[in-house]
Length: 327
Image (cartoon, rainbow, N blue to C red; front, side):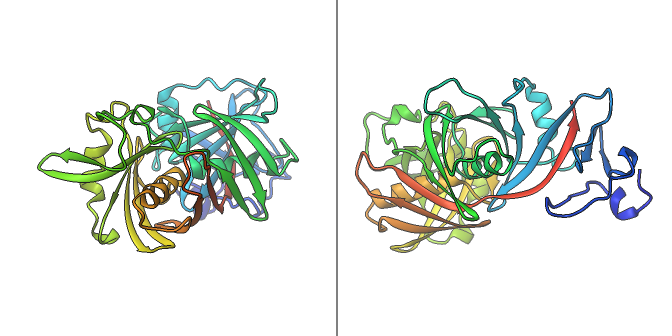
């Protein structure tokens, strides 16, 4: 262990482009001990002999943060408990979701993309994660394509590397209640939802994962911490739901906060931004190209408004640091 106090504190965050001198051997690498989880910061690809370790990259898209793992050569087979311990921000790596890159046998498809929430549950889709997924496979040399076709639990999506950003074809929004699933007598543009003592009007849409969207007058005063968990686990959403609180600022701007299923409120949610945009468009509140202002930053969301039109999302994806974790 280094005697430098700055390297002994809880966790050592190394930006990908920073330098750590490990040329003198493994003992000179920085190791952080966090509870029962030990994380070794990578440099020169060193590993400790005899210890099973999993390489990972920490990434973020507008502050929505991820642990990303390459499982193209070895099957990913880790327990809910392990994922929960890795996600812990005090005793683990800390993340909103775990993203897993897997190979696929499907023709014309480059990779399989799996997503696990911090609570260990596997989900169908994550928009910010999709951008980080694309940046990861490209930067790691797993592909040299700038148009990457990916299989998810909810279908096929296409990711485009564009300079420092990533543009994603998020697919066609599905407003059928059974697609979320959501208990309703029939499909409608809006629904009245009884939440304890109040009734809120929502839009319901699947962007590969389920979303409920409600319009608020003031995004800063929105009851995200109260309504979010109540709506997430509402009986009419048997598989739970992501909840978006949207304030329309202008026909081309929305301020948004999202309470994510299995992760609580996050700094950004890509599919949540898509859901808010299509619901507000359905309600004739906005135009077909909108900047979504999230706590972590901005996304550009575009949708033609037709039933067969896909939703396009453009935004950043950033690598933060790399490491090894004992498994």
